[in-house]
Amino acid sequence: MLQTITKLKQEVESFTAKAQDEVENFRLRFLSRKGAIPELFEQFKSASAEEKKALGKTLNELKQLAEAKLKEFTEKLEQGA
Figure 1: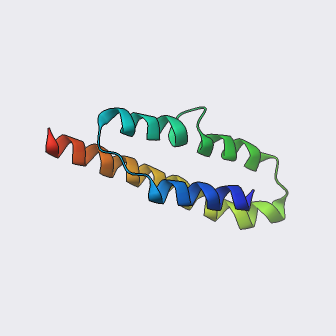
Figure 2: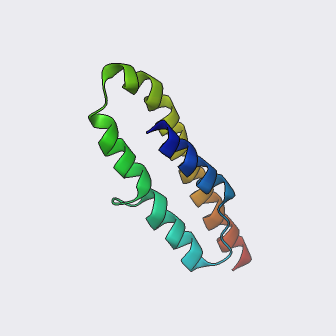
């Protein structure tokens, strides 16, 4: 699971969006109810207590990174419009 989190973090960091539909694709891919990050939180529920200690912080950081990136994309589009 840690490898998946690391891979998604790299994808989020390298993602670029220049149009509204790209921003929406980002949101759907990572943050929507059936997106990659909520799926990881579902898997996290079944992890052992030791795994939760190791994964919890990393998973929360990934979610915060994705939310910040989405906000950044949205603000850039609003400024350009």
